[in-house]
Image (cartoon, rainbow, N blue to C red; front, side):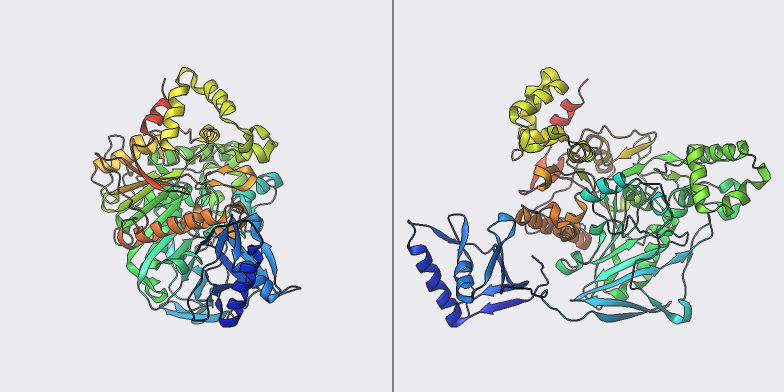
Length: 631
């Protein structure tokens, strides 16, 4: 239920009458057993209700034979209220007084201002949460390094809505089919895919806080989408409104240049383009410098900053951690299902030469290349990169600017700046092998979990693992004792990248065989996890790429339909995971009072498995993955 809802009490005669009615109502039945259950939530007309007796003492609802009867049923009868049983569940009960009712009211949204060196910033406060959206932090000429915004026009800026995003396929007409949008938006709902506004001036960030005068840890999130697309407001769960309310943190999200605008190496065309191959990353550096210089005005501690990157955001944060000019800007890094680049500058230059050769084949003179690329309208530039075969931007290239060496080089050496940080690296249970796409894309009912018996699962596993199937099943059940065998079919099968291209934090295999061991061997403190919860939607959908984001940010209310039918477990897990993130941001240790999370070390290969029953496993799936990839 909404944690910001107001509470009310039913006292004295009302509850006494209700209890009498409830007792009489059950007296006609056979013997029943009642058990108080404080986890049941009750609302009247949208407001949380705290039940109390005549002495003002709190009273919990009672579960009898699996149904909520006392005092819920009694209160309903006493007040003549209608009862709505949410999704058939008995752990969440809504009462209404009947007829059309308005949503529960709260205080009006209020203006909120902060005074920054650049001027006065206007945001808003909504029920105790402050939001400042679309704050400009930099500008840049195409392919050139960013310049920080030093002053707002007339000394004032209204940060009331998200700013423009980097131009990309999602901001162009006819680049995405309706099918692409529908499938992606159902499993990873967006707030802006269909109407993101692209602008080459896209350097904007957003801040959420619950106390502008505090000194809280700061979490800065860099979105996914490879280095091709995405935005700070693309997915609904990217919002920081929930985690700043439930945890002690200030939350920041960032837009920056992407694709050809952010990562084309134009260094051979002049000193002003020396760092063009990482222009998008340089935007992120300026954003972090803005956080360092200004976040205290929002209740954040500039000396305690954690950066989080999901998917393509993993490339961004792991690159930022390797740069000499970010040492004082953050000290903790969280790679969430992310890639980690290991690509030299020469590869970026090869991409540029390929694009230049294509332009030459289209009649562009050598002396006109720079002017053509700088002045070409973005849509034409985008289409030109596609035609030239250089439109997939996935990796940053070291050897540019202050990004001199990768996180892990081919000899296993750790970048000296990255080694100063504390890390979390982990991935989703299925990542890209989820059953949802077969269900939605082709209505393939072979992917419908309730249809997959142990016998059917064994047959399909045998087709893949042959004589090793029996051993695989035994290892799987040891690793995931609470999961049905059907879900073994969707265990993350990625082999990852390689040391000449990139490492993939999306690959469970590569994470436990390469990434964590290399970091631990280099003296780096690193924590590892698997997000393994199964969403109840469509009969069960295993945790896929992006599905865990809302749990980490405690924002699954934005995608509530995906957890409908198992809300109690889902929201409890979101509290657990966001609590771990907040603990990590505060201290560098993600352990909480609820869960002890030990780091991965050379001697102890620990992994936190997040599920309805989360647990810390030591080498819990090492043998399983060895068998999965056995020759």
